[in-house]
Image 1: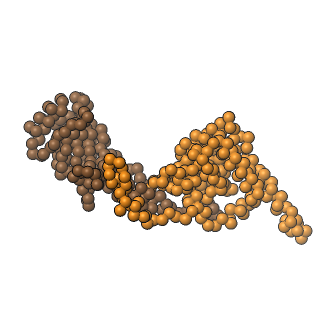
Image 2: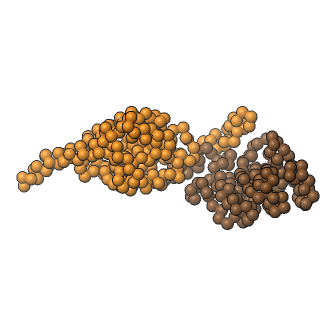
Image 3: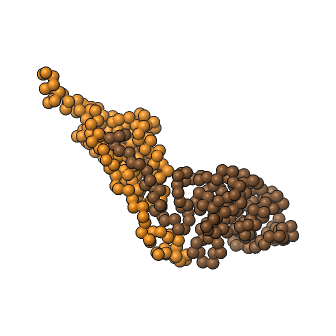
Length: 167
Length: 196
């Protein structure tokens, strides 16, 4: 199943949602809105055979020329039978960046969604255990946001020093 | 009594000397190696540079068996509680060498995740500059630490009890200048920063 056939099948079987397809340097991409991305991904997984979630990541597009949403979130999918790849992109915005979790049909989304939450503060509804995965639990900021200062908000020096006479 | 006279004037000083002499030629390093300085630390322990010539060849990976912590490499803020716990698990008397630019000051890693010098959080006896330092520098640090033990050490560790204050730099400023607050490139083709 090549990209053309995929586009036609999506158009025929999943017409209720607007999906914009594009292609750039052999990357086949589909853009959908944040509200429709869950149903679209579920359709791709159930009907189109995209059985593997290769990657789930995000980016902060604040002040990026031409960006429609502050955060971009993308899902890299692979059909392991046909070898087809597809990148599904969506965007969310402040003040409450929120998406539906795809953990229910791709178990591999567990830590990826936790990492996106950890770094960008995008919350995933329906995730069974949404907490930080790389940074310590008591960390307060979301460091890959563009408005997070490079030197942090005091996290790196928020520890009690050990006094030599006490230990 | 006559023995009190001896204790005050002669015996204590000689016991300190013997204790220091035993301690300084039998340092047991705890390799807290997190980055490339750890490779130089391993090279120092290997046959070419041979830290055994200075009596410090017994690297132990349990803090209970060590008395010299060598922090080699950058320390992430997530690692600080581990570093402090390992330091506190080491039995007295103990010393700490901060090896390399990153352990001493954060080095080039001036980011939210890397602490800007371990001396902000644990007491440090000796700093080694370099990125990474040569093994010879680490050997010189061991020699300098031996001199420090010989000149300041006491049999009951009284020299440590005098160090009742935090010894590192003061905490970094929490409020940041405006130009540090926004780090998005203002012009994405040249990546110039937006300074508000």
